Image (cartoon, rainbow, N blue to C red):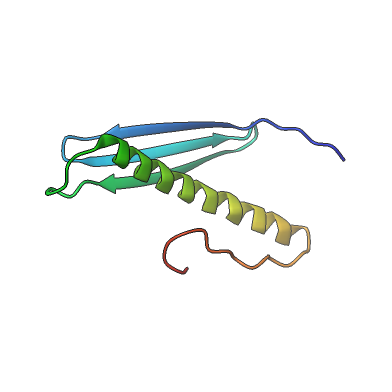
Length: 95
């Protein structure tokens, strides 16, 4: 069965004057909207490079969104009567 869909993603980045970058990524599937959040902090002794803060915050927001999307998919799989697939670790410390 062929299936085509288009999902829209918006990424918003904000940096304050204290070196903190926050990111919000919004996924719109047409029927559901999910939001992921991430932050990055520049250490006071480090050189402030906004692009690095953007990359870290955006990556963390997308990771947060990915985990939410995987959780929904796993619950949908269980709802179909199948067992939940083993949780794969994406990044970071073990869950």
